Image (cartoon, rainbow, N blue to C red; front, side, top):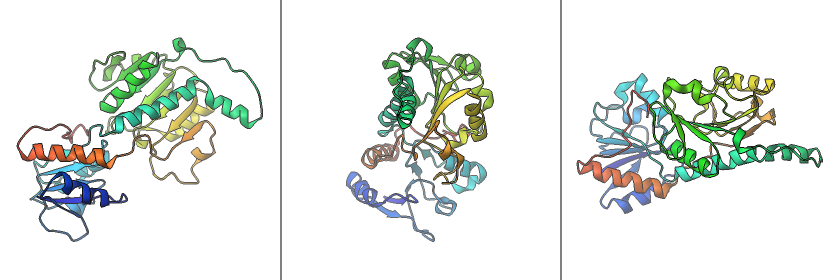
Length: 312
């Protein structure tokens, strides 16, 4: 079994050692430009077009992430990049759900307990009591109810918050009031804090915009831990200026790394983190990919196969 590996900036060593340890007899190599030697499988993140195009020997391509919007966009534009019938398989959780739960919980509780406001008071050397938020007036709405979104919604519900969830098709999640695509206005009504965990698709690009912000409670909060392309940046700034939004926590951006000249750095209402809400964990990732690869090779059904039309 020959496996191609490509990641533009992560260290390949853990995978070059860990994959053969899990798949005895497998040979894995890092793809280099001009490499046209045979390969049965590819394990990739942001693969160049020339890595996959023309390879008729590939049986499946495994992504090193749960989000596959970048490679899906490539395939939509140039479908010949991947031979017909070759599945693209994305990660499901692989240790990311618990990280997303931690990040979202920390950001939510920071706003709920008004720690962001107290931090600003500290910077002004002001000792001042602030009226606390109440659970009754702090409805949290989670956009996107895949494995990660559903996990975050349930964790936030466990704190005692009223939590809503919105997805393309309605889902049942214990402790969460769920809505389907056509129920977006009802889902947004009276929302005090919104968490975005949607996949990036043509339908969801730019969904965090003025029209959406205007349907939230005045003084609402935004947490975006999905994709930067979901957010219309000018609309966020306008909503902060008007007071429609009070603050935002952003872990993802349209262009990464975020330019040092970007206006977001100058806005105290915006908390910025460098795309770390859920970091791929090599050992857990390899466990999942290798188990699926073996199942696929044995002709067994596997989960995580991407629908290129839907984008996830």
